[in-house]
Length: 377
Image (tube, rainbow, N blue to C red; front, side, top):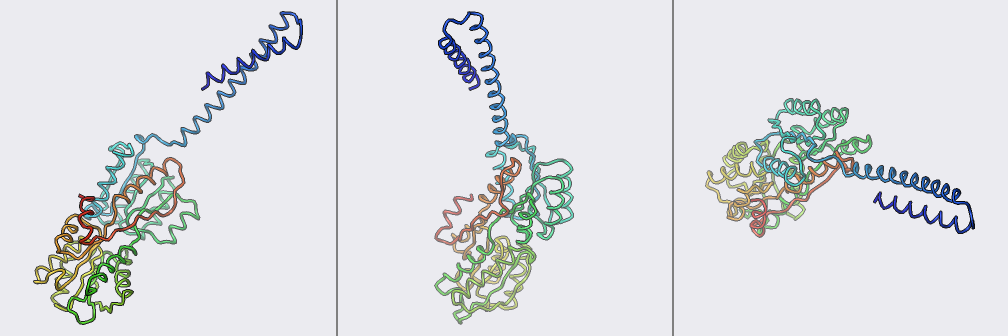
């Protein structure tokens, strides 16, 4: 392209000289040669200016294209590796960053927060000290977000929060204060609503004993977590919104843990027995524990009791297909992991990033469980 501009400049100079000769009549040869040299020199100078402008434009374009992916360092902290869903999430996140985004595996550090906020803060501060380009953080405690954001912002490191959503006021503060932070997740209200709808859409609307009232137990995750709050609230709202009369028998914190889910459900069954129509669990790990307790108590899911969870773990989806669980809700970790990675790289490359990105949940019922299983296996 530069060569073409120079050739065009020289051609233009020649035309100008010919034009001068034609207009000037019989000018001396010396005058014509001097004019030729002067015009050619001016044309070359103009071409050089054009070259410089083009070089500058190309450099700017390269800057827009962003940093070489193989040089980008990403620090990732997951609240705890023992969480089944977050294991699927982080494995897909790492695969996508390396195989589809072109990052080097050695430039991606994924740390286990061990469900300890102090431990996670140490990891984040180490990422800052080591000069990572961007962080992807699954907070142990959502309430720690202001501290994490402040320290990362002071170091000039963008943050992508995942899975555990900070307060809406904080998300707006990122916009108002020009802070490079975003949240990628799924609207937990939707997941809770879907759980309630799965029960409400049954022929008996979840009234296993036919007495006109759906009595339930609620196995919560961490009550501080907005996902646990919304799933607890919206699942029941969906039932009452469908005209179902409900009664809560037990609501207890299970911390997303399968063993705790089993213990809570076993104790509830021992205390309330056949009165329990439905067991709601804020995630699938606790639902698997609840299933163990239900079977140990001699109850049969989808006959005299119903059971729903959230996450669409492989084992749970298989149980839905085999009539051992009523339903679950697919928490699309593929979409969330890909969006989190994309937004992290957008930050690094200076692109505009919104403060919140939501990925839809999907109901998992016997009708579509096979399709979901094919996707996640």
